[in-house]
Image 1 (cartoon, rainbow, N blue to C red):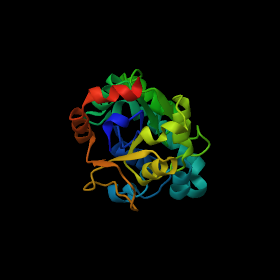
Image 2: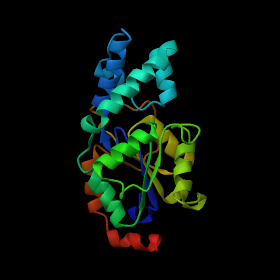
Image 3: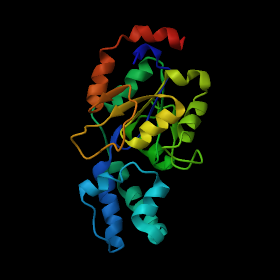
Length: 229
């Protein structure tokens, strides 16, 4: 992967820039308690983490999904700003790309209004140029549509695809990147709960945001100017 050829970098949100696994585990167990269902262990919940919202509600709640959605969204609205925290060095990564005049965006299966509120809460509005949330592209990841919409919203065209990175932590992120033809960057510690179900083409794999940031710091920022001028 050549750092000097990055034109835009799009990130997944939950589990990539923001440490949301425990929060979403608690949110779904809150819902399950309201519906008199058995709570999830961390291991079981990890198998659902990152799934598209519509698929997830169907899998978890079946014909009670409308009721479950109301409980879930109320829990998230009441708690997401205080209980969700960015990963160490997530802000520094965004600042690094901003300093190099490289477009940064977020493509997520989470509702866009929640993500935008969290971005504002962290004071990251000036660091993130584009956000595409759940349902805003017609289909969610692993479909190519949300990433293609983000590319279009960033005023980029098909000719830039080979210079676009997509950074994520789940199968859905990697499948989305592959469907578009973008370079996939994986941030996940395989020793933790998140697992991948298949082999994917990955340009780089980092265990956490800090190691990704360390990689960026070792790159030569001056070499990025030519592609962005």
